[in-house]
Image 1 (cartoon, helix red, strand yellow):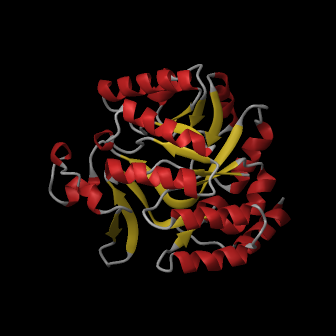
Image 2 (cartoon, rainbow, N blue to C red):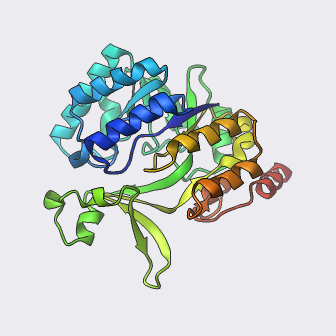
Image 3 (spheres, helix red, strand yellow):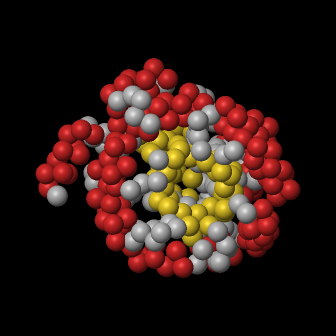
Length: 312
């Protein structure tokens, strides 16, 4: 399986984004890099020319470069940006990750990735997507192992790849309003980019003080990090072609090396899990959606897979 670094979902500024992608291109074990703003149009610090220049700078690394687009297109300006990006990507023979149906309509007939914000929940939808230029589908985060396996078994065009978010905070919802701005009694139009003060998102607690969600501008994310590092054998058996890691502000080079070793069978799931604790001792994890449970649940991978195999 190939290893992908998903688009940066947080506000790191122009320099932060450039530095991160250069590190991932030339120092990480990833095979694929997604670059571009997905969450908020106000945070699109890289102009189209700068985004293309960055992609060209990363190309000598040998990694596949994919240009990502917004998950919520809200005005003509954002739509026009996607139209121009699709045209440039087509000229450069780069794929574009579309995360909104507006982007899918603009890119029809071009090489596209259907991002995890596209509702690819059944074989019929994926069959349609494959007819309009989609060459890779990133499964929505809520789908279970059984549902994804059934889709892959029923709908596997020869040129279609399947990708799954396997590590990182789950992107749960997007809103026209900005949660971070509201938390500081600011309007979205005058947000002062307060999300930049929280490079891995703003923690949200319940009224009793328990960790609950993560606020990221107009996006709501899980507080726990989704983690399937113990389930890589299951992913291979299902037919997943690419696993995606969602960027965090610290330790991504080490994390990609760990995942590469796991995917290559150099270490066991137990060893990988222990190494994750070493890399990020304060993190809490979940994997419930994958096993058909509540998303915030953490299920023992060995026990869950054995139970599923018995049922099948």
